[in-house]
Length: 97
Image (cartoon, rainbow, N blue to C red; front, side, top):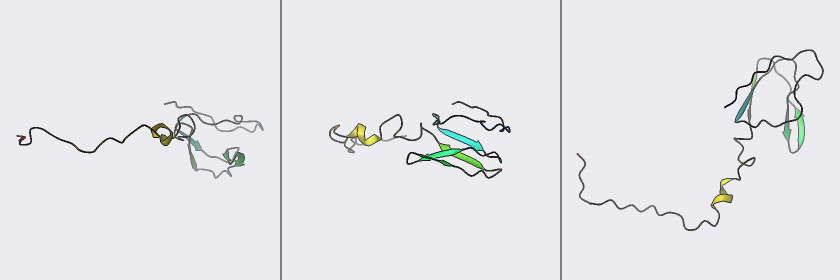
């Protein structure tokens, strides 16, 4: 787990980071009046209108299954017969004390 702290925005026009995706599990953004946060949807960057005092929680690349690891069906396809759910415990007259 990585914890990073970014200080509040300044009056500088180019304050912030360049286009990127967060490679961790979650990103927490405590908003102020400065703005600048954008999200990408269908390949297009859309500005998030800042609401002072709100918390934005982003699910990042590690949580999104299609980023680093193929979704589960790709791994389980054509792996053979599913395991049986039948269980046999011996001896049948076993008594637990």
